Image (cartoon, rainbow, N blue to C red; front, top):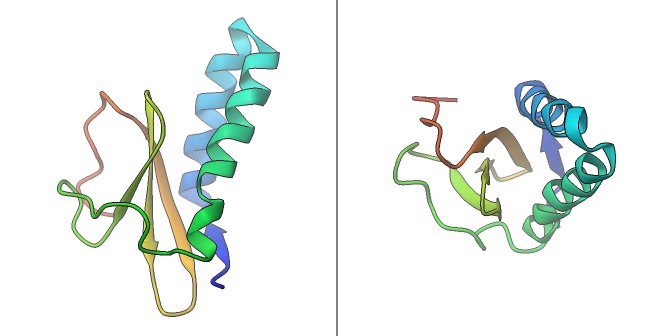
Length: 95
């Protein structure tokens, strides 16, 4: 079982998304936080569960919500959550 590590940039992405949602609905932001964080939990036991990204080599894409993708890197020792992006936004070129 590999530990799941949220990199600072991914935490920042998540916080920006939640702040935006909370402006209209704090309860919806809390639900989204749980949904996004829970969506990566299966990676601890199944690190290759999600598909490889076609847009960002070396990363995998977790479709956590129809509007949000979580990008992660699988290493020998851990799962690194590298970013959370809106599905319609351009992906980062590299992370």
